Length: 154
Figure 1 (spheres, rainbow, N blue to C red):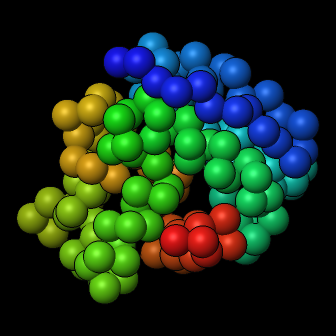
Figure 2 (figure 1 turned 60 degrees about the vertical axis):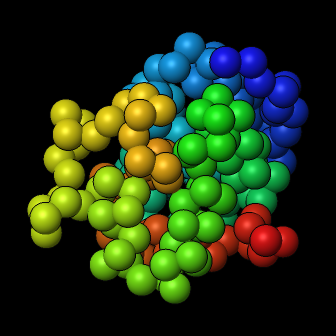
């Protein structure tokens, strides 16, 4: 799969080359873990130490960095994965979480997909399946992410 180069821009001076390398190699599970680490680092020292995002942390994520992470996921998945992809699916489902989770493969037959073994770590996964971001799959973190100002132009 050949991709257009993604500018690795960051408002906080983060280096996204490792994420780019993992995604280019199709190492989506490792890229997902690194994405969470990067988001936590962007949110600040307390979040980085905690190693998971709380919904109120999302507002601290710089638009430029979220767009860079999203662009990398999209570029190396043929536009199947990324936050903007998830946002578009969610919007197309009238922001209905009960329809969204099964659509992206995070919930099937009323059962949450178990991490990591039941997730699909390649492009055969449903569109919007990755990145996971919040393994607790709470609505608040996803809602904050999908409503972040980074996506307001769509």
